Length: 172
Image 1 (spheres, one colour):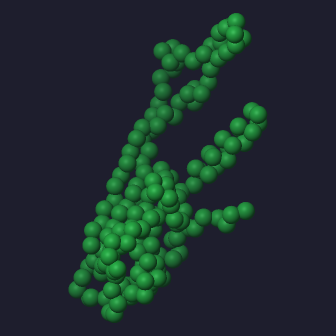
Image 2 (tube, rainbow, N blue to C red):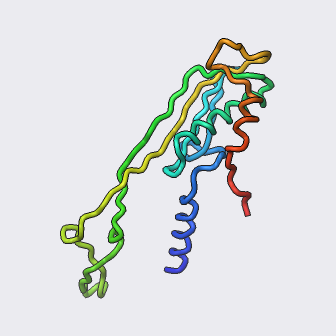
Image 3 (cartoon, rainbow, N blue to C red):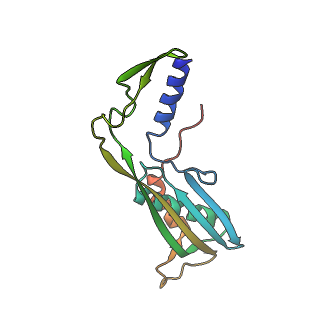
């Protein structure tokens, strides 16, 4: 039983040890989601884990906007609203966080580990940050307006960002 639990824990740690790939995500999960607002307007969200930097999250959002635009049969999109939220928290880096240095005897359970937080050495912490980018886009056909800085040619965005997109490995 213990070996099975260690294998599961190792698998979870391995899965969490990489940045979020470009993939669809369930509500609240890492990856992209979209919600159609009108026939030519969509809200897109991309959530990254703590190993996914801000630039990657924003790149994946723009790439998804280009994909949706082309799938809908349009040529360009205009970003109506765009925001990237930063979620930070402190995480303990103490190597002793999971160690038990004291043992006590209970007639019902026998010898058991006991952790005393008051006599432990001080913990160190690091800040971990997760980014979430959200944008509303409006999609149009025809030539992109040259004087609108918020307008993007979907084919050009896709062509320029293609090399920066990391997809998940194929399922085994």
